Length: 225
Picture 1: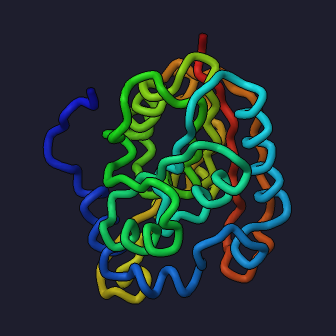
Picture 2: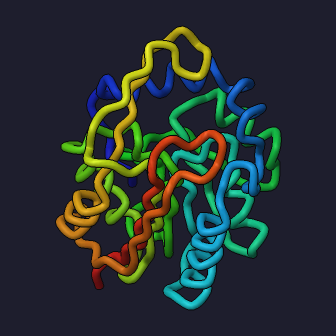
Picture 3: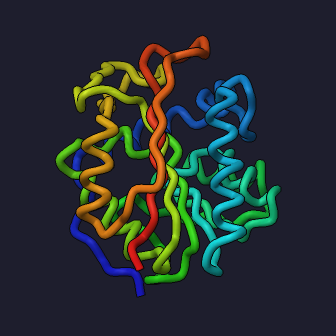
């Protein structure tokens, strides 16, 4: 069974409040499908690579962790994977269920997933670790290790930097504050290794889309056997 946790830390509550309030506005911005408007060619190719790794890897379902309106979950389902989406925002989950009624979505957070131990062949965290402070990434990565089978894959995407915070006083037009973090590829890799993952591949690309102002980081890692 999934372990119970203490009350949510501040960064979780802040993200939940913003995305509950901004659900409709956010969906208008990003849509409900992976597309060239919000992902570059490299980004989309990495999602395709994840699908192929899962198809050739150990048996099990996959999770879209921090799923928002279910864009990555829909991409994975369209490629034949058994997927569950997880998000902390009820507003985001409502949007995901409305857009993708054939996919299962559950409420949960990165460090406390509503998923049994050792059942997933893979998990994607597509820009959801950006709200986790660098010194708390290990807790989220340990939780990913818990739900994956040995040999299972994770794919992480995030705005890249040196770990510095980006503070917004009115996030997504909500008049609510929210802090995100520009995570270091090296620090993400190091903390994944501490959480029983072995590194598979990393990538970083320059900002290329209209809404991007920083480099974009991507990490593939595999749960140690």
